[in-house]
Image (cartoon, rainbow, N blue to C red):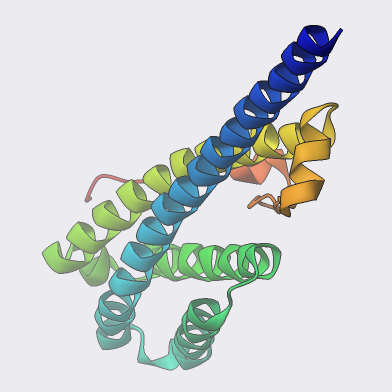
Amino acid sequence: MLLALSLFSLAIVIAGTVLYNRLVRARNRVNTAWSDIDVQLQRRHDLIPNLVKAVDQYASYERATLAAITELRSRARSITDVKQRGEVEEELGAGVHKLIALAESYPDLKANENFLSLQKELAETENYLQFARRYYNGSVRDYNTLTEVVPSNIIASLFGFAGREFFQKASDDVANVPLVKLGSVE
């Protein structure tokens, strides 16, 4: 009887340890995935001043658009909450898209090599950001599932593993369409 009780206790400890380790791995995967998103957001933020400067030279009367993008960039950099940051980053993405669309009205800007290079880098960044967002959201889904299903939810609540927020766009249609299109110079 004592041997059976000892084996049962040992099995419980091993199962608890395995579940705890799965939770830690899942949490670390979420943290790493967020770091990938953060790198792409930083890359986008670094490109914006140059893009604003390039457009400013050609479209000086578009000051309101340029100022709004600059303000959104500053706001986005200061937010740590994933959900709030996602909302501001979505606004920033729409502003950048509007800024790129301004190039259609300025043939000289559209042909400017610096602008074209920035536009290409921004398109690549948006694609990388989309991939990073998908990976992050998948990692969050797996992690949140572990924190909610039996028996790992018991270990999760004992050790303070809490669910995480998704980083998503307002709609899947918006999320799956690249923000910036590369066009040919006419």
